[in-house]
Length: 333
Image 1 (cartoon, one colour):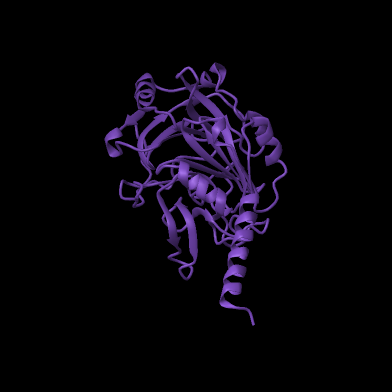
Image 2 (cartoon, rainbow, N blue to C red):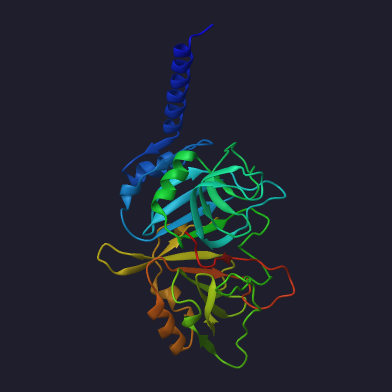
């Protein structure tokens, strides 16, 4: 029979081995080229973290359900990539543009028998979140995005409430094409409201409905309209002339250049890998025309971290199923 000392030593040794294995799952690098090389070789449970590549600027997390990967951008530059496990069949992770509503390092599930959800970062109030969890190499969760423990801890340490999370790829609600309404509008309390039509007005601007929080500008080619949300609450809407027959979806993030000037950079969505890090050019801007008053109001509200979503989906009323692209209310600590 082993002595108490021997048993204790064995437990300590096991913990050391476990800690070593967990550490080995995360690679660190200081080179963008090396990060790209390592990211292409990740196996389930592995990740690469290089925050020093871009030390300041707005943060954006991009979750690719098709490739089961999460990529972190800071100021438009890729600084980390991780394997994930998203929702399995019947519990598919919703696609869309979300904000981090709540952070809890020691969270336990309210729906699934108090299951531990370490380093939880809530995306919706009905249970979808980023957190540490199982990583078998395929979708297996109840809808959340599972991350490696070390990556979840590191990500938790750099994000703030209101940070933008884009979820795209093969899921039940695919975001690239839809005839359904893109928005399920909410008020400042998170309660659903009726879609706000423009009636006879060309545009509307009501920033007092949400005075702070992340700004999302949705450009609907289907409706030839633009909707502006702050913290998930609609604060503006306008008619628009959008001269663009591209059927794809694009996400563009407002960053800060080395010279301190604002820069709009594309985030590479599935099918648009070539757009990663590309700056929004004058030609693309000129394809969208809106009333001068609306343009001036939106321009005055822009801050680093703002997101533009260009889509074929509708932003009005629809008889079809709603596709919620942005789900956010006032974040809670």
